[in-house]
Length: 341
Image 1 (tube, one colour):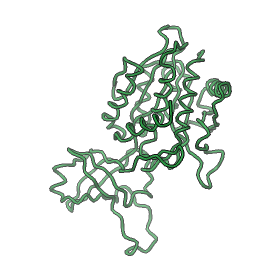
Image 2: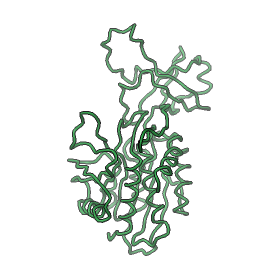
Image 3: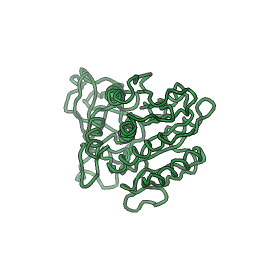
Image 4: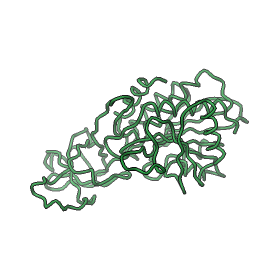
């Protein structure tokens, strides 16, 4: 799949909001994309799930997963002076909150700004605010706000979606909408082929709050092998080379004691065989991805991670390389063509 098509797909996916626990809108969009390759695709307990590939019940069964939820905030109250208090949904860096533009999703969507003290009034030694001290200013009075917003409503960052120079792409929610795009790219590559394996595609919910959608989705699918297609840390100035990947140099294949080394090795060998550039992602324990749920599902599933390098994770301005998404899709397609269980 060409980079411009991937960019268009990402634009469609990333413009739809869906924080953990409130993924209905993005699930509907992901479902329409998946139906083109998996006509039986459906929404089950919030997850988007569909099947394709071999109809042989004895063929190896592969689960391809990417999560559709994003980080955000949840409204906890509206103060009498007209400000909105919030809690975090997923891992938000509180350092970046002051002066951020946000969308509040109530009976209609309204704009807001996270309150920030001007530097002229500060002594330059303020601590990072706690979430209980965060306030959002919408310009509405408390009475007006309570007609639009209620506790429990979602709040998302109002970041831009844009192509940058070269093959770079920036948007909120690239974690993990770019994983969704990579899987769709793989399905596009193999859509007219007879595969040696059965394939279940899972676009899972609530990854950012404990990999909850993956747990029930994998249990329902009951695969032999599960690949969590997610993001990992792209190298930035001063970052450790052993803890990050380089943007533009291909997917990061996971190696960890909590993953299946045989699957990791197979992915690496296939990448070498078909000349797809790839990188190691070595983790000393669990992975912090849906693969942690897959590996202990039912009687155990052979799990691995395939990660796309991403800068500025969990911010409104995440950045990826479109080439990495394309190469990740190519690796997944090559794996499905050669899967032997």
